[in-house]
Length: 318
Picture 1 (tube, one colour):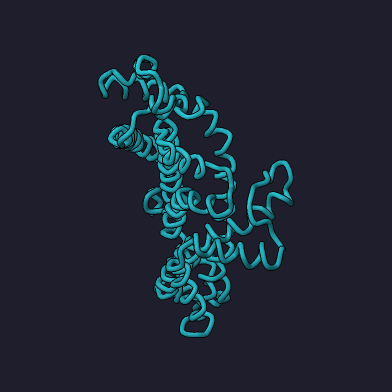
Picture 2 (tube, helix red, strand yellow; picture 1 turned 90 degrees about the horizontal axis):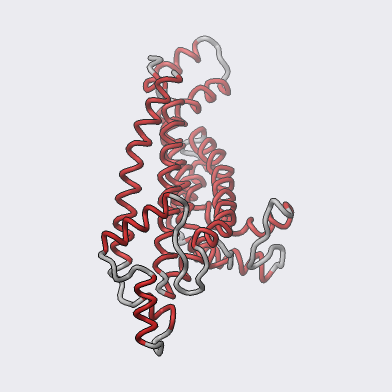
């Protein structure tokens, strides 16, 4: 199985490389279609024309677009994503300082979503047509319908402003101060993870109900196996397709953190992205987008590997 898994991962990685290359081309091209001169953004509209021309030459803006792309992607492979046009800071350094905050926020949303979705999906499926099932279905509908920025504002006002239980803005690293880190990430994590929890709840309920109807479980019941163990067998098999949904949702959490960071003033990748858009700093913008895309592709590869491991048909065990 190890060799098959390795071959599977190699195929997925070979598929991921052209995807990343295509995304880098699209992002590089689209950003340069945005009106505005980076040299003017950097020096100001009243700058000396000779100085502007010198800066354009220094930044490579006078080179053909394909030369600019080759230079950029060559540096990016080495880990150099360029320098900001606004503050002359290395984009790689700016991303490195903010990426852990976004990842902690994403992990908080991921943990919250699974903590809600797995019990809710199990209770909803095992109580089909009852009150608990209605609660699960209602949560699944509301969770995907409520915008996360609105939910974040409501939670912020209720638990941060009115009750004063949790901080309303800012960030503390869980590695440096675990208690403060959890307090700062709780509301953003709930805000970010609710939509994913709703999707996974509905998916798990659907797959588990379908699995509970399968004939092999009737044979298991006839052997006198307890209902709890039957549910365990069904849940294990039902989770195989759910894993794919969970992985995809993790990628969406990473993208959704942009909005949540704005609501709770978390200085992460989302704020860096919004700041780059406002200042037309496309070097920073394309660097952030490239990192987001890379993480999304990596997550998909990991999900594919997990799916391969969990699915006996892909492993060749059946």
